[in-house]
Image (cartoon, rainbow, N blue to C red; front, side):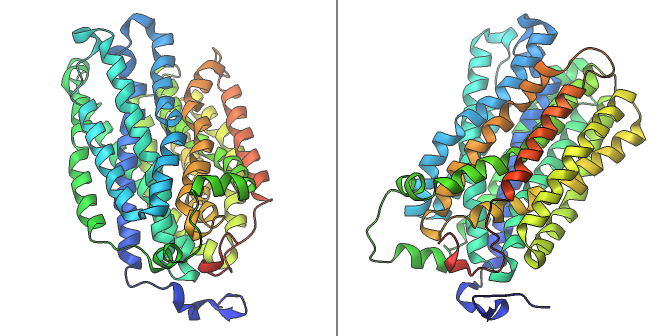
Length: 441
């Protein structure tokens, strides 16, 4: 059955079709794979090694908290970077900014792999680490919004959610790739791992960056974007328009975006707490990430297809509710040190729950803004929402209590974020039957 909008058959809306739709989706996928490979590599090693390598004088507890806090630094700079990338992405074009973000991330991540540790240069080591983490964060601020805008604007109107879902499917691929690499190198003897083994995964990112650059340089801007910027309407700063005319959408994206705390709680905090406090082997915890990321490569495009058929809101809300309920089961399974239960509950949280929300999020957010300000609107609002995500592991490290049930405050915190996200989604306009040229109006 074919859905309709504006009184027309969706499939007949050829005004928004692009011969480059598949290449745009591929470019978004590959670029996001790099961005999130780099981000998850950092999150993993902040949990496994950075407290020892860069913060040895703080002790195990405070070293872990400060190490986790450096994850948040990457998110603090993102709103400001979103203003810059959004402005130029809406005025100069999506493609140019996406090339810049790719280069920034690749260079920053490779340099982290070259950093001397605290034992070699003292306090300069953690300072340099934080600075490079900030560059990573700035890059990521421009990546997801630009990639989603580009993929969505090139896509047929009845496949926008699927096209935009490849952005976060790339994130799942990045997590999978990062987890596999961490699994290999974290299996080294402790001395080898802490001396040189942790560096290799950071240096490998340069190869993914080169592949992404080749694909993105061959991709043109979408016809929808070209038409929007070629009008004779007076040009205003996109950020000014957003905060003057679209502030309700900004607030909605911030509320909806709280679901993303699930990702950093799962990939960073749970890894650290599970291995250091609960006594679960590093292989099992990283293996859970590998399994869920692999399954997400199938689950997220499927969720995008479903969102194009029945709407964005039902999928987004359902995924949030699953995460809110299942996160307690996951932490309980970790506390029981049961490999089978850890893997099963991890799949419920990250595949049956998080994959649904993560797949639909890019389309849900992007469709709240019209073409001429979409990059800025999605970047600014999305990055404001992600500040909480960046510091979620730090908050969790402060909330967790000693004992077998010490995880309960962390589970409650995570569930509350998901419930706020679900409730906020109820206020969002459903757009799966809206023409691409009419979005955000």
